[in-house]
Length: 228
Image 1 (cartoon, rainbow, N blue to C red):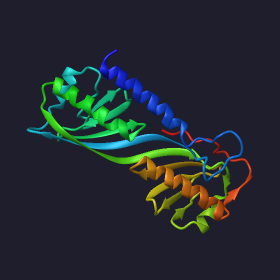
Image 2 (cartoon, helix red, strand yellow):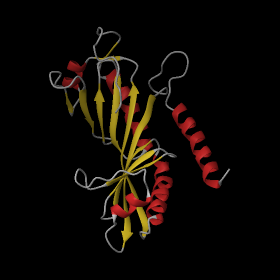
Image 3 (cartoon, one colour):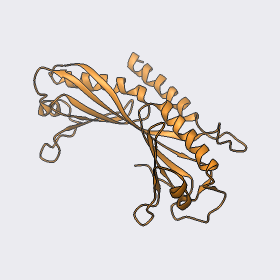
Image 4 (cartoon, helix red, strand yellow):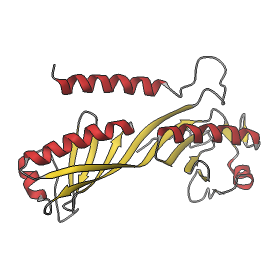
């Protein structure tokens, strides 16, 4: 087994441990300690040093598994299997990495992308990685009265005729939540996993302290969220 394969195995074990965190333990749910959420997507941007514009056609000729159709989209699409990620590469030396499950995976993904670019005979150096967004989904383990929440929660917006969820812009930590009547949530806007945890914990407390958490508000046609 190569060093790279060993590193991939270690990362997979870390992912399993990460997924086990924030899950509800057996028994009664305690919203202060048993946070139920998981990170779904990490988005990062990358800038590499170049001496001239990157010839994306040259990369496409060297790697048959990439996608490049400049008439439809100016960037080249490259996919990495381990860690799984999709990378948009532009001729300016800028990249967008999406599909990561952990921010710590970004460096390994970018290293592989840089190697693939160099294999095509293109010189790039000194990649600078910036985590732009972490998206997580979760469950508050209670139904939510969204009409009441829109009134008592500052920076909340609820227009059920347009979208079935309430949009809540938490100010500290700076995040945005989609909250559904079933208690399912989507959190976006964080740049570190610690911020996600703090935001979910705070939201758990807020919905209960403000009295918008309900044991039963009837069946909803929006019972499940499928993250895309």
